[in-house]
Amino acid sequence: MSFRKTIAAAAVVILVVMTLLHTALNLWPNRGTAGGFRVGFLPVTCHLTCPVTDFINKQTTGTSNFSPIRFQGWPELKEAHLSGYTPATFILAPMAIALREQGVPIKIVYLGHREGGDVMVHRDSAIHRTEDLRGKTVAVPGRYANHRLILYRELKRAGMKLSDVNIVEMPPPDMPAALYSKSVDAITSGEPFPGQTEMDGYGRALYRVKEVWPGFISCVLAVHEDAIKNRRAEVQELVNGIAKSGKWLDAETANRMNAAQFVSKFYYNQHPRLLEYVLSKPPDRVIYSKLKPLRANFEEIEQLAKEAGILQGTAHFDEYVDTSFAPEDDTVQPHAYATAQK
Image (cartoon, rainbow, N blue to C red):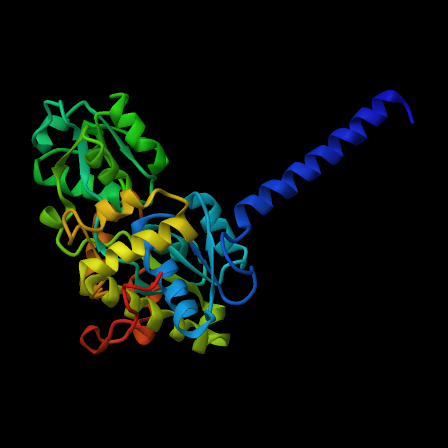
């Protein structure tokens, strides 16, 4: 074999190895086996009920009915679901609707949270109202993030348009540093990243989402229709566990502080101080109760997203939501799990 052919063959081998390593790093679960009923999640508070359910299941019964699979970004999480690797996933609500518009057989079966995801500016900023954002640079997680709709909704109220601000898409973990260095004027994303800027002393809330958009929804639990058809019992058990975890988290602050410890250590690979902060200051910064999907909430998202040019408006509530798995909120009981356990 000539030297040139040897180099070319070696390059191919290296490329294949790098591709396999990249796939393994993105799809390898952070804990437990990769088998079973896989559920995709990101290390954000919007998805907190996923690791909480897994941990409590294992502590109380010795096993879990699903395998939580941690991803580091939306593209990887979405692709894993589209490929069938994760039959269920936590995903942005507008992204799930957009996938349905594109013909993907996806159904929202439960919510991940309510509230959470403030719009933050630098503490020293002269921005004190929505009108002050004119001409400023605002970082959002991506095209299909509901946090983009928070911005659109408030600009609309102020008689402004999205074109009145400079929107940049940025991975949420990069947002605190961008705000600190003042390379952007404002950020909005799911927690814990807005809370991090506040905890570290340089971020200030322009407005709390719970004040301007009560009941705000960012992330939902979505399931492939094949799983609904063929693995219905597993889907139901997952939803029931997440519902109980949400009630457990909202029952008392001690539960949230306990969750901050074990989730940070075993699932998120974050310092628990950050989760402790965003789960307690204020205590209702993120809410994990009342997670049944409601038509009115999603019809508002549909309308705003269509106006903002994010959705086409061709998919509607009954096409992308299956409410048959969601228990009535007043019937959900929290996990019987003592906060003293670790």
